[in-house]
Length: 349
Image 1 (cartoon, helix red, strand yellow):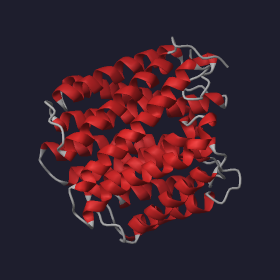
Image 2 (tube, rainbow, N blue to C red; image 1 turned 90 degrees about the horizontal axis):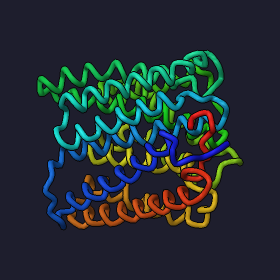
Image 3 (cartoon, one colour; image 1 turned 90 degrees about the vertical axis):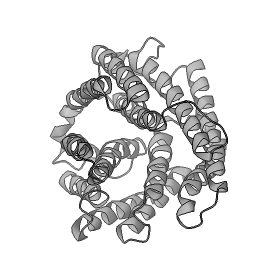
Image 4 (tube, rainbow, N blue to C red; image 1 turned 180 degrees about the vertical axis):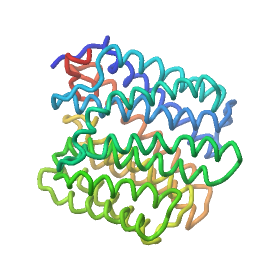
């Protein structure tokens, strides 16, 4: 196992994390209204969300899987992917949904297909990765629906965006992080059905059966947290995330943007990014990180029940603290043998 700053994935992860955190801080303080920024808010928000998936989540998943002997992205493909990510994010930041961002995103999607196709053979196995390729496929099929409905100004396009994000989160990113923590898998078709149903429940089809699937995912996560091998903070993340999905399935949590945004941020910064990237040497700071994350997502969702301008400021402040924490992790990772405590296999250099 070797690590090199010349690795395309190494550079992509480092640059993407810096860009992602910087944009997130700017957006949060803009929403707080304390600082005036001269930019198109919608464009920067689109760039922020796409960079999270394109430049951070998927590359971290590839690195994690490569450490287990499954190299899905070689150096040539990683280089092409990095260029596509840079082009699409720049396009989103400057022009929104325009030719540059669309072309870049198309290449990104193509790489996802090529990289994840070998995992399709795991579908009928008792394997956490059984849902990866079907989830990428389902997300791909959601893109035309989003494009057509958005062009018509139909609000249903937002439902398909929610389904798209849910399938990527629950079907791709979360299974890799669960694999990292040695969670017990379900039978592939069952797990995939739960994931697809959860996306429909949070998106265009919030009916009984999809809601049951969403609740099923939540139950599985809570039960997985009983694994004695899991670290305490990660166990807590799984329990909270699972309970949140169950609460959303039965209607305890309302279907409003603030709750959805809070949930996405908690899932990404907690159950997904934390086990994939938090360094072993940072265990003594885990409780502080968990507290800051709780304040951050709580401040995003709190105005649904108790509107007050202080929440926006608190979300910006706690979000900035989280950004600083991950910047420190990045600097430590770059100064040591590996990125974010993850050694990049020589096969992907």
